[in-house]
Image (tube, rainbow, N blue to C red):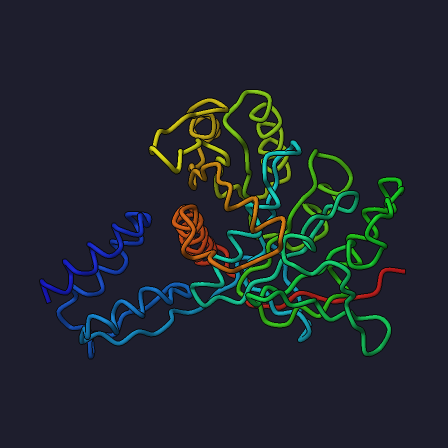
Length: 346
């Protein structure tokens, strides 16, 4: 058993997972009365299961109770979602949508069922990033839409699927908020482990609609290291705090540039901005994602090819595992075991 504990520790440390998660697994392995060495997984963790299988370890795996962490009780069989995460930035241009897509992809790689709701009514980019341009959701009854499915299996819906590609949504705030609410409520999401809501920049009508009317679990704030981005990310965290939405942490995007030829690291947009922001608000820095040409290519082309082999994947994987662990802990404190309603907004 000592050898297996050491193997587990080494594997998890290589994945750079939260020390609390390491202790969660190790404490189970060290229990002398553990029947058949059964290891409870708090969330979908396919790579750990593959590691156990490859190492031929005498450990069985099973999932712990999959509690939901949504903050409102609902009941409808058409949408059964365990965790709903709002991804915000307060400012445009920091790579929030890109981060949302890549975190969703990393969760999918671990075996989770994941969806993305593109809440950027005025500038939807999720259709391009998931390779679903010019696609339209189907509806059997003319009311409830079926989400589109990306190559990697992400279920998604966006206003970008419902308007012409080059058309502008020239709507006032209340109309945009109503459209978003319908987009959420009138999509048959089915059973999801995670629904990621990709918020638009700012702290206006759409953000208030989502935080006050939709059953969010928690929020994540994306920023780049420079002060002009941090100032708006600061406001985004303040908004969630005021509305009593838990902030799981901060993701620093474009944290550095690593030269492919020589390996030199250059902090183009500054250093430690996300870390300082997280410290200021007493939340965690969930991870740092470097600048990468590969990210730009995959997002522009809506491609999943070579995603796992790309240098930036390990950063996304670390963040995804951290989010999964934090949401599991959140659900233990305030579990909600009901689904989300789908209704028509007249």
